[in-house]
Length: 534
Image (tube, rainbow, N blue to C red; front, side):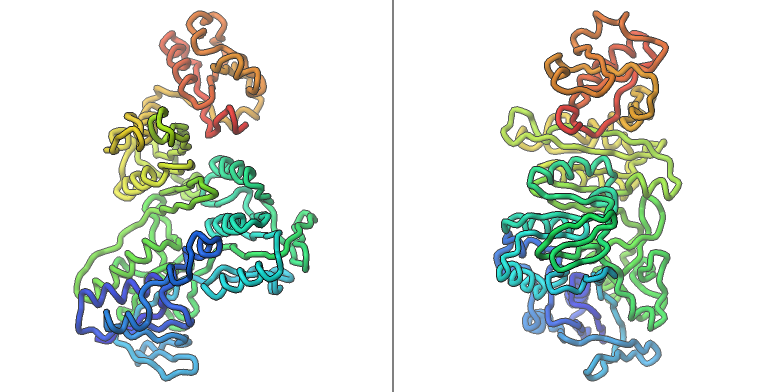
């Protein structure tokens, strides 16, 4: 059996090496259109910023190693321009055609420059491969560029912004969405946006570049943003030119349509990686979401099937993470916009809690948002903080994949020692909060409703000195210890809404009133640390 794999990235290399480990007799060929092979594209921003010392550090097994160790034939600068499915022949640009018995499409996604006037300027780059990084660094060092414009506020844009900040440049980010990292909910991103201001990163949110001039970019509101060097980081699109030419079916998301074993509508052609459409485990809708771990899983499933082992893929829950100037942002499942689009009813809670016991020097605050269905099924989680976000989001991601509930989350097994967690972990408190909402034991008043001019009695339970420094408009101050002695001061004919810095003191005050028969008590549901964020 001759298996040809188109693409030498994560999915292509994973499919090839997995197949070799399971089948010593198969003839395996990888066709890669570029001169680079086995490069970790996710690491390019870190190479640019100097966190990764040498280009070789982000390159896997080379062509010769693949031949010697795995007996896999890697052909570089072999661009497939046509697939003859009937005769199983691949047409190669300027090369001899290649035959196959089984074919794996692992071409990955492509980053395209948007159709903007001036976008092909000599000082405008994309972060696509090692050669691109080398060109960027050469231009940056040779010209003394100091003003960097990043077009796009997703993972790559933020990682590239940090890379240039490490090099000593002044950075600005232009993002067409109203907030950074559009797959997060906007109120969660406020913490990241505030965090970036500490590093003098300027943000132009809800703005588009209309044109690039030599020294400035013209925004859609008429503003001119000066720059010396610009990076296009507006995301990627599926590279589906070959599948379309070969009449390989595409799905609703624009990705390649496959079954549970990565087979296309041609049983001899498989696909894996960023171009493949999958079903979102939460919304049930088709999606195409670039993810290196998912690409590896899909590649392994294709290789298993080719070697006689059936391991179905099933549905998948999105799970991503990035670091932004020392702050971690991670999510799993679906966000509010996706749930609304899918017509799925949901509730949500926020939690501000330290990552470990507060007496430890590394103790720092984490922010979480948990989204869940009326029946308690977990639908999504978003977390932001310096440490400890990754493991907790990973735990919830696996619960989402198997249909886990908030009740299970409240009892999740979490390893404890003072440097790593608190005895009652953030996950337990998230689960308990969600359970209390579903049981109507906690009633929340959404922070966004404060702007609707509803007649409420807003109570700040912090100490007077904290209240005097800063408080929400219209709030009155009843320190927590004074609540029981001032019950007559709280009205019963309007909503009494409690808040404090992190929520715990307000929760205790809320419990006092509810236990004293105040059915009109509410907690302010807010993602903000009210001593800093507002």
